[in-house]
Image (cartoon, rainbow, N blue to C red; front, side, top):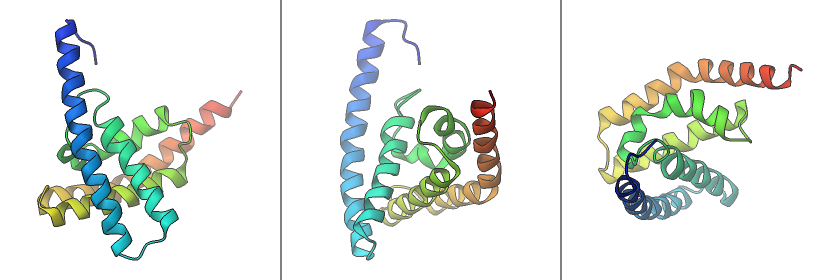
Length: 147
């Protein structure tokens, strides 16, 4: 994202700060929700960290987008941005991120933050596009290590 004026950047930063505050509340509630589902501490930590990266970094990278936009940005995240920007990206991490993000948005559906159509869109995109994301990850690795 580029800014024409310092005021635009300051406005963006203020909006991101507000979004992060809300998101961090959601993440705490999500962590408790996962714990109540009986997941292990390691799995909970993994899901929360993956979701944090998605909602607090990716969704605010190009523009300050709130969590509701996440149901419609998953493909650009897991099929491109995550592969290029996360040094730890791998096929296993793509699958792990997809699982955690899907759980998070299931939680957000229960809270009434998103509606059923949003959630169904997210699940459909994950199901339909996962093979493409994994192929892109493999292709990226091949390009990086083909010296």
